[in-house]
Image (cartoon, rainbow, N blue to C red):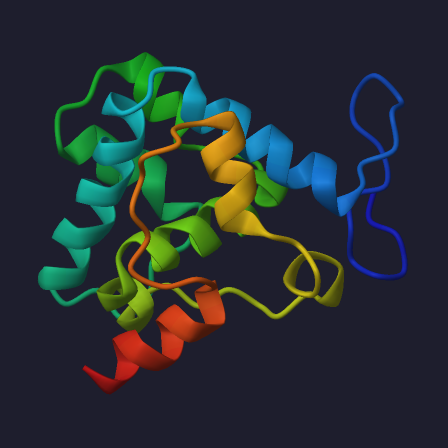
Length: 146
């Protein structure tokens, strides 16, 4: 259930879903099987972008994964919830600004103001990951200008 700010109010266990928990939830998904699963997601998005898809949405990922021959378990994982996709889309842009021509996150003050996505990634996933942009908004400007 979304609250007035458009943020998921509770997880299945009743714990309040704060913006920081949303990011941590996404990072846990990435860290589970990192870097293989993350790079598959990046590859899927890059592939369809080069095929001319005008937009990549969460709902497209299951079909895309299936078409690329990924196993059904991973395909199902790519049919992720909207809270997960909202964070993953930000990381995708930071990692590959060129994806800004097909991925369009919606600005959300709770997530986009004061949240250090890069530091959280380095803490929870991999300390050595290089991001080409410090925020998804910087990535979007850079990626769309390219």
